[in-house]
Image 1 (spheres, rainbow, N blue to C red):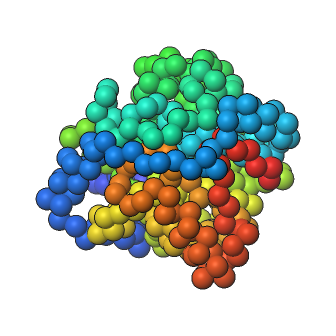
Image 2 (cartoon, rainbow, N blue to C red; image 1 turned 180 degrees about the horizontal axis):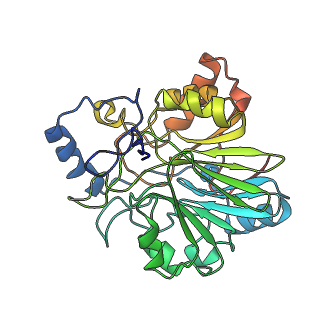
Amino acid sequence: MTSTIRPYHHRENGGFRNPPGSPRRTSTKWEALKFFTSFPFSDRMPKVPAAHFLSKLEVQEQYEKTPSPSITWIGHAAFIIRLGNKTIITDPFVSEVAGPGILGPKRFLPPAFTAKELPKADVMAVSHNHYDHLDDEALRAYPYKKETLVIVPLGLKEFFTKRGYVRVIEQDWWQETQLEELTITTLPAVHFSGRGLFDGNKTLWASFAFRNADKNVWFSGDTAKGDIFQSIGEQKGPFDIALIGIGAYEPRNFMRSVHASPEDAVEMAIDLKAKKTIGMHWGSIMLTPEDPFEPPVRFRKAAIDQNYGEDNALLLKVGETLSI
């Protein structure tokens, strides 16, 4: 009789938890509740520098003229990644509000693509079920539900099949799917899940690796820093480029367990053995109270201070396409 060893991140009574060596929240439950019932509903809208985004014409020209392999920043954690002849879309949050209906933080900068403007992707990878990553309105409007292969962490398949998607694969951490020359690996992240008051950590959260014969790209989803990224670097690295969140990190006593600071992001890039990293998850929506244009300044400084190399810490304009 064989016995199955339950993975550490699978809780005995159901649901999931972070890997060993992950940071713990230092705020009280009251402090967390106060934050979630106050700041996300503020109407604070910063002034957006013109140099932070491309015009619609520039977005289209760059996307069409840049050959694969390339990465296009739609905004926040949404990217179009082209590797070989495959197109991948990550976390396509493109709606105005990150929340149910009209509730929740509002964008201060539109995405580079609307849901209906998104290209037909071979793969859509969604990291977890928070509203600024799993966008119900956008997923309903996306035109290619029958053609695109969707890969999600455990527990999220039904969300997509209910909305008309027909090719959906759930993966646990370290599981892989092969699509011709492209390998999509679901990997650990340090975060949490939930879209309401009673579904906390019932579905899994994840990062992803996308690899073909020429390039290896890592996408963080939402994550804090943790010991697990050294293991990912050793087992799945080195990476040509890592897309890592650098925003939404204050108040630190709460966010240290769920989001990386810009300094953490550079440490993670080093642990992942990433040759270069792109800072994401900033510059589109006010999720937390720090200056929304502080993350890139700290990100570049951290790359210098940690001897990673300022030229290796990349910052894209929203809509920009980078050849890799």
